[in-house]
Amino acid sequence: MTEPINKQRRHLMLGTATAALSAGLLPSLAFGATAGPLKVGLIVPMSGPFASTGRQIEAAVKLYIQKHGSTVAGRQIEILLKDDGGVAPDTTKRLAQELVSRDKVEVLAGFGLTPLAFAAAPVATQAKVPMIVMAAATSVIPQRSPFIVRTGFTLAQVTAPMAEWAAKNKIKTVATFVSDYGPGIDAEKVFISRFSEGGGKVVESLRAPLRNPDYAPFLARVKDAKPDALFVFVPSGEGAAVLKQFTDRGLAAAGIRLICTGDVLDDDLLTTIGSAANGVVSSHHYSAAHPSPENKAYVDAFMKANKGMRPNFHSVGAYDGMHLLYQALTKTGGDSDGEKLIAAMKGMAWTSVRGPVSIDANTRDIIQNVYIRRGEMVGGAMFNVEFDKVEKVRDPGV
Image (cartoon, one colour):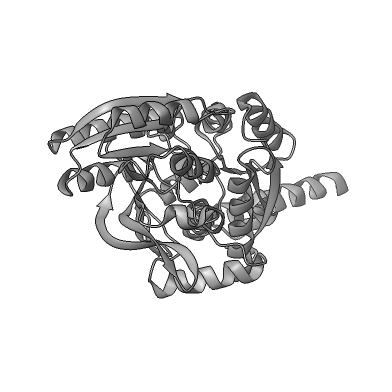
């Protein structure tokens, strides 16, 4: 009689556990993965020509965790930082695959440049892992995977207001000069379209290689064309070289104005660029001089935590990327299922240090203000000082 009684007890215990599971009384069994840490694979360039981007993103992620805690909705957040060097898409893809398959990360984040985000997108799709793009800025990036959400910006988004401002402010002719890859091509197309619609004329359209660029021959062509202004986009880290050569090659002395996207006047580099940035008008979604109380607190905390390093726009893309993850995880009650997290992120809105932002529920791209700024000395240091803005700008598509 002992064996049948034991079987009955086992059946009773199993039935009771099943009923409790259905009723949500045993979350540790029903939701076993939730009890462990949530691993985030952060892939950024910490070495190579775009190391400043990785440094800013890493610092912002650390600051967010420091200010908001390392636990959210019962999950411990664990960051696995990987350096992809910023130039080889195959490296980024391999790191993403290793993070997902070997390290069991449940979120991918970072991505300094467009080709690198493109390379990781299929990994996110196959693994159904959310991929938070904090920096890469080509318009089509979210279309590469239904699991991509962007918290940085797009080049088209910040270029359109610059083109419209130029057309309205006595700039009749412009030469465009961009880095020859996705964001640069987006910037070129949008600038030409919007500037032409405003009555302006583009007299030259030049593209420089992304790797090891020599700007001198391009700037010589611009000087010969004698436009009213030169519109420039180069990725973060290259602006100092462009500004120096623009001055050294005599374009400023020839009366050619420089207008650009904010990548050229990266806050992280403005102290290096110095007086060459004075008077340069740019358009972007963030400036360290943005006059909100949220941003003043952010800049102070960031600089204190990073030996005086000034935060730039990539840092804000990362800071808001962490905010989006925390809020989505709170909304799901700690459930890190990829589809549920993405659903929670769609349509989310908050007050960022850059101003009001939201995630478009259809495109999974960011909607934000774009500011027109001028390089000015403030308290003995160069800053991008905002003097106009366009509110709630969506990526215009190209």
